[in-house]
Length: 268
Ligand SMILES: Nc1ncnc2c1ncn2[C@@H]1O[C@H](COP(=O)(O)OP(=O)(O)O)[C@@H](O)[C@H]1O
Ligand SMILES: [Mg+2]
Image (cartoon, rainbow, N blue to C red):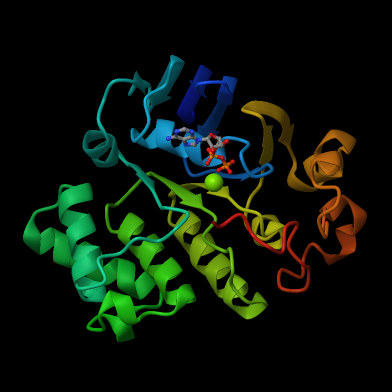
């Protein structure tokens, strides 16, 4: 790995029976960097996050974080090292308040003691624009707020690497813009962000680099617009209402004006 790499995957492979979800994946993410991940449903994107965060064991290959292998290390310890993921389908404790949900994440995920966890939770709520809803029950939140809560829970663990799984799915354009602003602020504070997203305009407003996965293989890696313009990437999204940026580079700076690659979203 290079000196600067925070996360390094080396030939990571994983299959579920006949289904290959990772096929010799190798790539790295530098400290403080941003990386977007696109790929059709079933490409193995969520599974990849599982393997990085420790929820899912790899079949073979190595994952290094901050220069040490984390393969075989559990999710809680990886979280304490600084790896945090959000879930594609937010799953807060509906019977707890918004604040309590974040506090639990800070304590259990981040391993923070109560006073530090309270501080981290309040900071995460402020950062994600949820401070005014801190005492609401999580079950009463609308979709955008649930997505924000998911980000707040991740943030409260004080990660160095935040893995976002389709947090923009199902949101309206202004809501996507709000979320983009939050993610940019998080990254601006030095936290590396890897963002799986079907809502391509959100990625284009946020990430410096994009990879594309298909059937567990990394088929493209590079500048986001350039990657989205490659024929092999475009082909994957044929038949969807493609907003692949290579077609319309002039609109890239307008984060709220483009339809998603997959308007149905990747969310189940
Ligand atoms: N725990 C599991 N057991 C069996 N198959 C799984 C499991 N998790 C995911 N899969 C399968 O692996 C493939 C990749 O899934 P996933 O990683 O969720 O892809 P993506 O996030 O790119 O849509 C899909 O075909 C999915 O059905
Ligand atoms: Mg997924």
